[in-house]
Length: 162
Image (cartoon, rainbow, N blue to C red; front, side, top):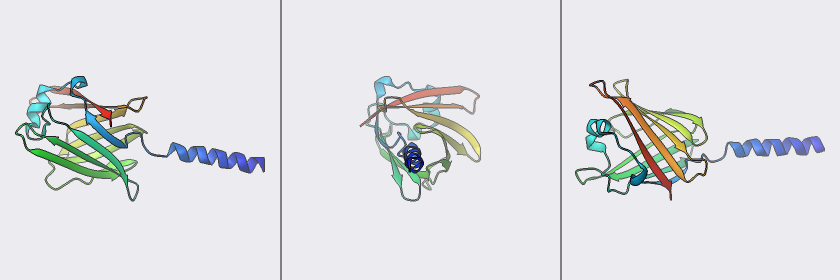
């Protein structure tokens, strides 16, 4: 009987390890803690959030072992933008809207840590390393890549849990 109880306890603990990823939730961009790259801003100027906007990212679990990201922001020209895509909870190609300029692949590293790779024509444009802080209250997203002119860029966006 003790062995059976121990087995159920171990299985219960293992099940909790596969619970909700810490990235699940609503995150608001903290502009004061973020550092923007002029090279990256020039490359994707049509999609860049206005630094004064209230950029929000909402990560949710949806049916079929999938995650969904809904990102809302205001672009520099004043127009609002909503981006939404989904991917398998353990990573893979994301389903993106037809007007989204990139193909996206999400790579699961560990709970609360992801890489998102953005491709154009099969070539990597940039990647985002997403990490939820140990306290679960901040989400740091480090974007890196190389511009067509060969210039490396890196920027860091910090989000606060809402």
